[in-house]
Length: 361
Ligand code: FES
Image (cartoon, rainbow, N blue to C red; front, top):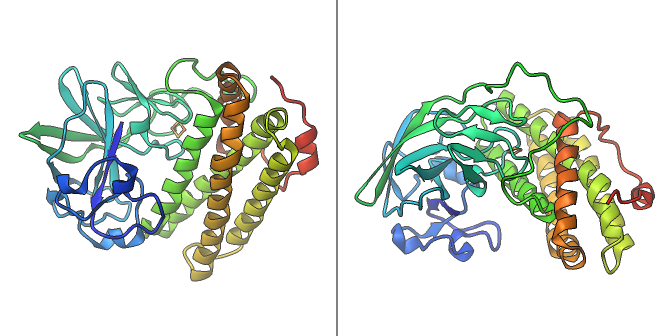
């Protein structure tokens, strides 16, 4: 899977510039820098996307404008391979199925993960985070918790140029929308599809957080901003509670300094929860609100980096793959049971209670 976004400008997050990510060479596009898809610096909304020609290229501020864009020097993905491109601030996934180019919204409507990181299963794309399935010909939800489908783009490829027009169809409602939400404890996530090692699933959700924080500044409508923030807060709480329920009790039995790492993680979660509460007291979109949001982002980013550096590698080193996949299944079940933060209080967790919880596996 490859991610391509071509814009001109410096990276504000060390190590995340596309050139250093090794996704592609900027020389291929004749631009100064290439960014990972989903990285949307605030100033991008006011600048052209350098590699694209045709229908303008200014950022759309999160709005779904019908647009035509061309990406020159594009290498068509292999049959069944997924790549992501950036169309004026909107991430679009591209693939080839039975020799035909298909394009659809890359951002999963469930919780913001990149569908290009997922897998193609016949004409369905399976999201890598919680395994929702979308039909790439219609955009409809085939399976999973997403409450809407994905928009479909028209895609043509001629002489090294990919032309995208869209969205050709808006995101449809789920085919299974009339089905009742599963009761807690009854959810049974599918057992096939993308990697379900818990350390991989957690890292994917980390990337979703980064994408969602990066996209907030592009939302100029206060109602859209509030909805995006509320969804992000729900996911932060599900993620934190899921780690306290599934991950940390297992870390305690696996890491070199388990109690310290798990306790430190719970205290980080509580700090993030405290900073979220400050945001909720402020007017959405106001300067104090943005300031508080940035505090949450900074606390969260520090925690993500510590987990990626210490906790997750430690779990990989000290547990076998079968157990990590079993934990991943628990992780997915926890998410399904607590969709929309259902049943989670958002209150601070007691580190000792988390450490005392027996690991289920
Ligand atoms: S983010 Fe895609 S299924 Fe959850």
